[in-house]
Image (tube, rainbow, N blue to C red):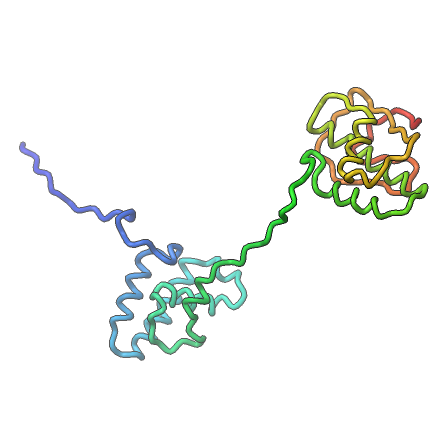
Length: 221
């Protein structure tokens, strides 16, 4: 038997006009276009209210928004290209207001001097530069150095000397801060492993321990 093939024209979405509100689908757009073609305003308004109900069913998550009914009417105007003459319970939205681009958040221009320490460490060092010399300040520097050593070892699994950390502190402070002589950091257990802990500098506490150092069995020198 000879088979015949019918040429059926397929309408692909990729070949259609892009939807402004794709969450409601192309059928809602067709409903809106038919509504706009209705010459009687009262009928257009009744059709608009029916379309709003359909939109609510198609996009139920909109109910989680405050004043979701108002949002639906705004969406209806957007689908209609802001060219809609009906008796809406809400003022018609302005296209310029709805298409306003978000205000860009200004980014800080200063680069982080040492990414493995982070910007917060630089801020803390900046604050320490303004503190008068005292025993509390010395302990703060020591606690900061312990934390910085921990951060260093997260990025670099090799061992690091106390002197390297002290030099990093002074360098990050633009040499406005000098690490007091005689500061010693507690020893690290060779089997200790460091992940990314939160900053926990125990200011003014003699132990100088932080969460990342619970495995530390060495004694302070």
